[in-house]
Length: 524
Image 1 (cartoon, helix red, strand yellow):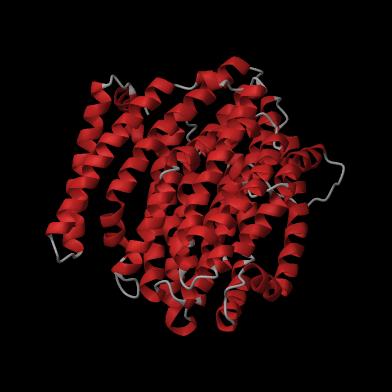
Image 2: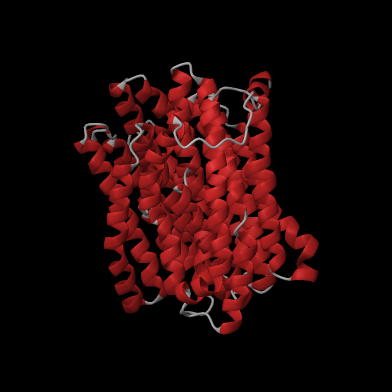
């Protein structure tokens, strides 16, 4: 208990594994609340006009954030502040933080004001399938959501201060508050404002979670923000150098959702269906990719700053191998158990079992690429930790451009399902491109990956997934009345069967994964 209390203190400095564990647990809880939020939206609006408008309204704010601050404020700041901290110049780092934040308040604030004005033109261009009523509602919701990007950026800056100090607990809590904001906004205001209440709650959640909590914690750590403008500041110039490639380019990791929404707007309800499937997919994906990547970044940056290249390469390769193995296992469970899970979690209100079946089809295709999403998150942060944002973003831009004809062709050939397939192809190209670039620059060798262990996990995935799928399909054919108790029982039985078979295969093939995970959990 004393160890747990120590680990959970906001000021506790974590190891790489304990940080990953804390963030995995927090991201898992955040995604659970996020699924509750999605469930609430589904219950109220299903996949109809209002749901499509709300889900589409997030795209322009995301684009503003991505193209102006690279969508990764904490990544670039961790690199800069780590260098200041390692060289004993923390006061200079604090001044640069104030200058960068002040500068970007002006830039980002101006961009948001401009976006508020051009929102109607943008909606008509990016969502050509929306009729006049849906487009007007999307414009209204977009304008409500836009100011939240100021809170996300400032929160990312203050959060970087804590990450450099290897304090991850605040990062663990702030997403929970953000997700709760949407739910509370809906509960309090939905009768008066309709779907706009969810957008207002989202903005409130962004203020109290990502911004306010990080600001308070950074202040307690001794960091003071002062409004300063100095175009010649070394830290500002470094931040611009690191951020420009992120701003100038585009990564398929982010653009995937935008591209899918663009094409899906031509099919009624498809924008919502894809969004729901992606939300269900990103719950486990974020636990692996987002948590592991965020936790690893400060440690990668520290090794690179100390010029410890050999250990850097080994640590990155080990991290990639581990998350890829876990990604394979997660994908197997998600595909095998996805149907009863989606039925149990999402059906109800205006979201029917027919809607759930379509949602699962997209979800199953997305899940195939789980291990790729997990691996690319680590690979990308290896470049960022080395202070190189140009190469991965240039590669990401090329991959995105090459992927566009694939999305276009598969959409016109296979309809909406073609977009899900194109997404998998795109992320495969993205991961391979980053891995090869790291290898050719002699930063992280492809030979350093644990291929035998990944092969054992793949065998376990195939065995556990196929047998579990066969069992669930057989039960579905025998039972004609499906309700929540049926979904829950099938999910529990299928989950136990999948876990048992997967663990058995891992042990029989000599996998070290179960033993290593248990050992790490005891030491965390």
